[in-house]
Length: 73
Image (tube, rainbow, N blue to C red; front, side, top):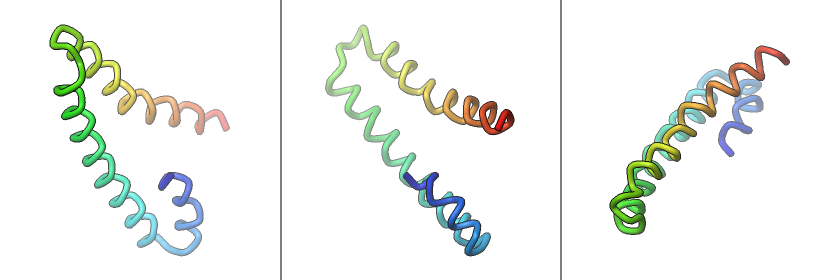
């Protein structure tokens, strides 16, 4: 959701882009920590590794795909 606010924030000023990115990073840190805590309590021990690797790959694939798509646009 905060990614959608970056273009309007850029129109206002660079400081607002920095604020949006800082809040985005803080939120991602909280979500990632909570996500792994849920996996420990919810997922069976033999499936935790697969579940963690599949969900963590989104953190890496998301920016990669976005950079490719924006290069084409």
